[in-house]
Length: 484
Image (cartoon, rainbow, N blue to C red; front, side, top):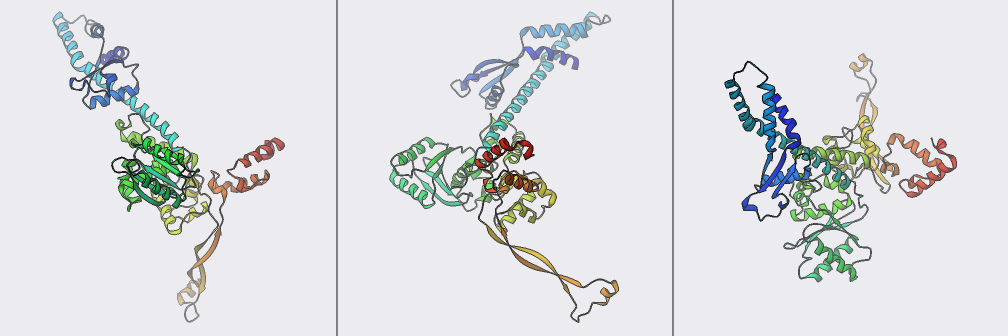
């Protein structure tokens, strides 16, 4: 049986076709009109076509079947009879007839349907793999979109019937204000005044506009205000993808993060944060709802999640994460960290405020020297004013018994005086180290500082174009050997 199947597979691989036909009740349906009456060679059919056909078949719109050329049965049966029936001279004509009839029945009833099922599964798996690859490539580009940092953002989630949801957030993602305005309704003057007021009140000059229904009309509304001089000249807007924002707004993650905010306004907050830092916001959303794949809703969730985790780890390793702004989803993907340690980092941040140095990671429970060595290069701390913090330390002081003598037991043991621990509060001034915002590991700070000094620059130049100019000038004058 297996040898027959292998023989048949050699024939069908080059000749089988995939045929589709629309059901009568859906003849006027236009969504899958390209597949209403079509035929594809299985060697040439595209992955997106397979996924579209599978979806239409699942929706009972198309009838799908695999077909072989009419002469395939004759060629296969002839070869099978020659190899397995006619080869034996001991069989009578009657037995050979029974075997030939059985072969034909097995071909039509068992072998051909089985091969068709395997071929459909093979085509689907191939299409799913390619879909996941497309998803990974698009997601990688999306997550590495440059963030808009250091500014307040006003986000608009457009809407017709229930108005546009508006949220204003600060430069760290905290919510400053929310509102619901009927920007696309009749009372345009009132909405213009409210929008102006929100921008002025929170010193905001950046608008994030969701690309959902009503986006184009809302964009025209903002453009008219700007052309009429009702918005400051420095006010700019950007259209942001809102795929998955509504799903996120009702998720358990959003409930934990924004418990006191109306569900309808959470999507506006998500849109604003996507503009500020796409990577930190998009990792909260289920992969199938991000909207960057090919028929990703039909792909197994496990495959998408594996692809998402891989892309996130690559992006985190490449650009790092903001230690003072990242949540559990981003922190747990850093080398050396897991979900438990990520929760401890956030707990430390809630007790003590923002991290001001990478070295403070060592104060987090569960993070020792080895873990710090692994994760320090992937976290970033961005500039903050010098700050004095109070560091709690343990100090040991010698102590005697109330009678000024050692106890008999301690004398017999020959041990020294007893000690007691006291909490000592030590104020420490922590200055911002520009290297904490780079990918340079703390163990290389001394070398980096020496190199900066060698090219006659300062640490404040790190990340600026001028330090590259100084490095280029130094290399052109001294050569790379001196730098090495």
